[in-house]
Length: 392
Picture (cartoon, one colour):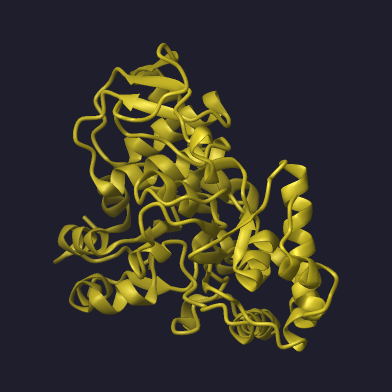
């Protein structure tokens, strides 16, 4: 991979150890995927923030980087953590975990990574169309490419952090227009009623296509939230970083491969995401983090109701959206629900909170929670989730 003289200087360590390590990560990645050069990025989004998922070894690495005084060269943000420090009454009561999580956030902040702690940074600062990014977090990546028309590969936490420090990323994959062409036509031959149906479609499509890029036929004027759930689910069971919600897209062939998805396929996806018929201990909404419209919709559905005494209702969003929806938050919390920020049910300690059965409208959460949280799951629509959380 070609490096400029300045990049070579960084690679050789003339700008310090931290930048050298970052450059070497990017060069190794570029060589692996046969990138021709590094390209400037508009922003980076770093995953690997929750202490639950990264542990002590990652803290030691972040401390070593931070001690050098290295700073991000571009606007950079961070994914959800394992704790909402503004709602500690809802969090696991272990001071050691609180201290470790706080240290991780502090280290990222020291390096110029803005700890907005959300998987929906695009609600806070929307990147430009055609802007090159280095974003980690699979649901964020597929949203940026598919709905915002930005360009980013599916970065890991270390490569996104390296790109933040250097301000560049290797030029390969989705950064090249010839790699953004659709490979497969997906014919949807059933009616999709809500975000859960779109999530089930994503689970089935991701598992079927792996890393192929689909375009969809048969989606009738889908809403942004529905497409967000489609993409996050696709990225959970597959490796695609891009999809097209309609046929007007660049295609790799005049006659691309075609697959059909019918009601039976969706039913199988639903059944595969539900592991129990027991009543839930927790109803969780907000993976990916809720938008303004989602918080508004939840508040309207829950107004005048009360949450059951034996059920936790968690709604997760960013601090930014929580502030913008303060009036709706008050309605939800008056009913007994909790609107949390900075965290996500998947990356916090649910078993320690007494949660054995989690109900959610997020296909991504239902897919990951059994293994990452060791809980049983029920996958259902938003309406059914709220019905299960509230008293009759």
